[in-house]
Amino acid sequence: MRLEYPGNVKIIRVPCTGKVDVMHLLRAIQKGADGVYCVGCLEGTCHYNEGNFRCRERVNHVRMLLEEVGLESDRVRMYNLSSGEGPTFAAYAKEMTEHIKGLGPNPLKNK
Amino acid sequence: MIVAKRKPFEEIKSMIKDYKKVLNVGCGTCVAVCLAGGEKEVDVLNAELDMARKLEESPIELGKITVERQCDREYLETLDSMVDDYDAILSMACGAGIQFLAERFAHKPVFPGVDTSFIGINQDVGWYEERCRSCNSCVLGMTGGICPVTMCAKGLYNGPCGGTNQGSCEIHKDQPCAWYMIYERLERQGRLDSIMDVVPAQDWRNQTPRTVIQPGYKKPEAA
Image (cartoon, rainbow over all chains, first blue to last red; front, top):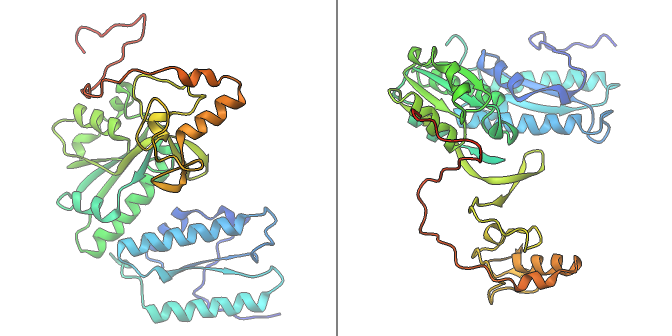
């Protein structure tokens, strides 16, 4: 498809978004990442039944933790798509990048 | 098991605001199972504190260790060589663990990271309910395995009060009446006659710290 998506997005592959842990997301922000987002399968289509639902709960938990700390909760988001939707993947990458650019850099960077 | 809930972040942050080097001690037994103060919760809290203090331009150095149980002397020993490197200790154990830790390291300020809630059961992951008030005089044998001290809002030992209403308690329609449940269960088991046993008034005045020494054991002379 030769699709393009912003080069600032670093992809970390996991077997299922159910593998993503609160600490993975929190550590990324702690170490200075401007934003983190999880891209899981469409809700209701998880091969393991509830992996993407678990991820969504964890993303929500991290958003709450960031609020407590005093950071914008919207630096962490959850997206869903099917594995056949390359163009949607690229669109989400662009959307997240623009959204994070709007928020500005992570205040923890270089601290 | 003992169920606890992590304290609000602001409360924890304010307790240790004057310290620059804090050791966060998790407990690997009850509070780890109820997802309040185990190894992972220590990591999450440390990450939060680290970020919050950096944002406030007052960085903090945080250590972490999770011992098997903070209510056992042998596991606390592992901390002996560590605590002097820190200004204060944050404990994520239950109230018993925190006190035992504070007693061992009486020269260090010790702060609680959790609020100890109750003795309860695990309904599902992350969902716990109270079942025991550790009253030290169990009547579950005559109440069909339902504790009237815990499950009845008034803790009544001898039948329901006038507030029982179609199986619900007067405090809330979603709160079952303990004595209604006891009646139903005893009836199903065909031993309703045990509901007629009268439990004498308990000596609730005796609220001093209790000690248990099991048969065959004794309190060591120099403990």
